[in-house]
Length: 140
Image 1 (cartoon, helix red, strand yellow):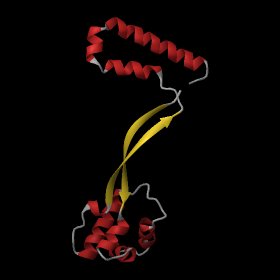
Image 2 (image 1 turned 30 degrees about the horizontal axis):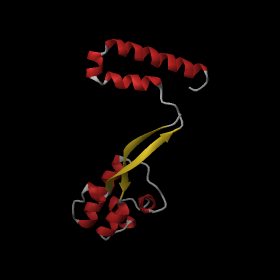
Image 3 (image 1 turned 120 degrees about the vertical axis):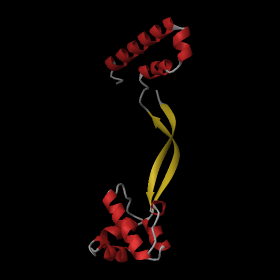
């Protein structure tokens, strides 16, 4: 059995290349402002369209912002370096939804809990039975 779930994920996009173009500077000038020309290699890598940045150290981010301020004479807002991108998508899995998941949803429904207490016990028993069956037949 398959299940799918609609999901919005939030990604953060690195915009150093665009910021450097906006402020008419380059990675080498930033590295010089940082006092370490060896950082130019890292900064060029951070602006490469073929390299995905998966993480960045907060100190490095602060150093870049400080260097941009030194080069431009302006305080550069964080939004010039980072962009939040929301991605809509549907996550599909071939895994079977655990039986307890449907039971857990009942616990969020106060009307169901107060009006049908016997049903809650029956649903729990059914969820446990389905989980035991799934685990003994190799489905989990």
